Amino acid sequence: MTDDPLVPGPRRDLAVHNDWWTAGWQHVLPRQSFPLAMLIATASQPGFTGSLDDLLGELFDGEWNMLGGDLDSALTFFWPDSEEDPEEEPEGRQASEAKRWSEFRAVLTSAGLPVPTTVRDLSGLYLTWGLAYQEQTTAGTRWSMPATLPRPGDLLPLNADLTQRLDSLHCTEHTGPYISALIGHLTDGLGAPEEIFTSLDRLAVATGQQAGDVRLALTELVNSGDARVWRGQGQADPERLETHQRFRLAVDWDRVGETRLQVYVRTGDDA
Image 1: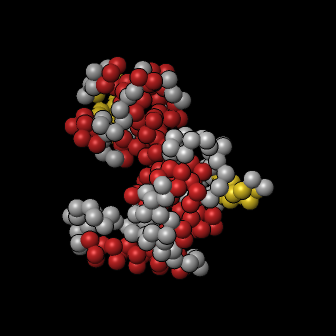
Image 2: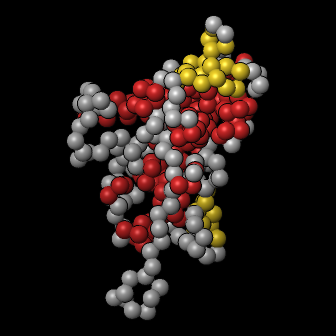
Image 3: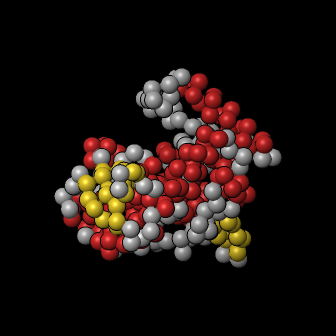
């Protein structure tokens, strides 16, 4: 603290848990789940001791627009003052909000958990689920988070559609770097050829990856319809290829350009 009340003290930077997006909780919880996770991650940094209210006061003078105010603000699934999105809310804002709440209540009730109505209530569920931990020390409250967050499907009875969406998300998060490296090699290194004759071990050397990682990337590209793998006159399953077996790889660059190239952007660190 500074001795001069007119000079503000240093403010810590907001933090984001590395596993938040991979875990997929943002697809299950109200919209304030992400800023709440940021607040807890920030409170978990060395040098801070106190409640989330204390941190909110330090960072935003007690009110944060992303939370809708303070920790006692009502939870919502959509931004109340944002423009309606016909794709995200085809039934209209009010009906979509009611539907999401109905699904959320059903999931929590099935798990025997209370349904939160405020951001503070939700922070209590974070503790219940092991998304966060709280310890009372002689210096005050200390927050922490596990290195790897638990997944919603491990703790809640999700419906089939949401389970499939989260499984797809986890697969994409896992294979994304491998696909990025493979596409980078085919485009930057080979000029995006319509077809190449290669093998898993050759691609592994060219991309600096393990053959098993290349196999995962090829399997994802084939399953999504972005590429085809041929041996002889028939299509081949990348999961069944021996690492040394030669095959023809044909990539649909139009599809890849629409769905992948803008996602898997190579940075200077990748070069």
